[in-house]
Length: 540
Image 1: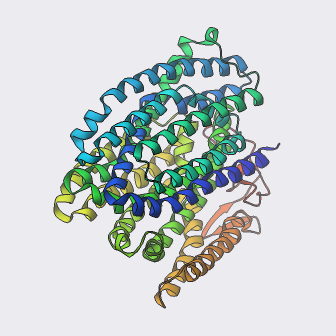
Image 2 (image 1 turned 90 degrees about the vertical axis):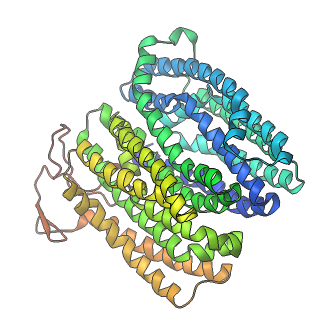
């Protein structure tokens, strides 16, 4: 398949793979809240946070192996790709043993931090143990998910994830309905996780027989390379995990565990938006890695610019939706009681995440170029500031203060800071990024937001029918403008001069197109393409 067809296929499969857990979470959230109650649901949220914390023990190796395999395959080095897979498997098996040891002390540590009712202690203890075992058993198997990522077989990865997610959701409904306890939910998580990774192992063996797993291929040099890349990937993963855990931990420790529930509802919606961004941008990382391995920096820059327009436009789209329709949606979804508490938190969190959401292409570009150390440092500073800010502001403003403490640093560091850093990586002035990505994105996203504001001014939706109608009008208006402006952006030429927002760029045979060839399924390709691949080629 051509590169464009592969990217289009992967985007569609990732979209489907995201839609299933999104719908499942949409249906499960109110069910769990009402069946478990605020306190037990808050405990389950904290147990899942413990699982995510254990996942950090891989030190970023599970993500670095995908990049290593993609890099070696771009250079037709099958032996090095197999060495990366075998070495990472051995390393992750050792990490799995550490996760098993951490599970031993998990209950004691959990009960030291959180005030758990006496009736739930045994149930929570078993849930923590089972969650820990699921992480320990699947640690070495996660390398095959990275291998499918490197092979750009997102279709197979999602073909495994989707049915498993459906089965897990059905079992969760059944177990919660019959009040089987949190330990039973953890058991479902264990079985589904192990089964998913074993199936991906099988898929990887069928798709790429040359990608072998053997002890003779374990390489010290490859381990050094993996650790050199994964060290900063680990730092990134840690900070991104902590960023989502600061609020519930501060709220549970300083306020009450019951108040974790409304915050988790708001954070879940913001998380869905970020998940959609990741689903659309992670398929570009292997492509960007291939450009980097070929030293085709012009195409890499084009990919970043084109993807940046869509990310910023979608970030504004989601922010407008949650600010204007979030209260109605929460009322219909989880009930008016929780909605009243959760909606202000949703507004704070989504506005804080708007700029960071727009920079997911910058994140994937830095990973592809193995220049993510700067991003990790930015995020580490953000987390340090967010911890102190949330602890300070929760004492002043309570629940909203805890959310403000993480939202403001997110906008400043992962938003503005990451944007500036990415411009330096691709050697493009910030003004050029604003004109080529930000301005078109604003042109697309702002008019639909104003339209939705006018419609909601006449009255907020009071049932699902009116809510769906308003959402449909808003989404269609956005899609039409996106197709008209973003897709046709590179065709705005007159008499050999590009005209856009008063900026004139003289066109010649060496003009770099403003659209990315890898985004051709979504864009009309430019008429002229640069043949220069040097790092210092002028994209301006």
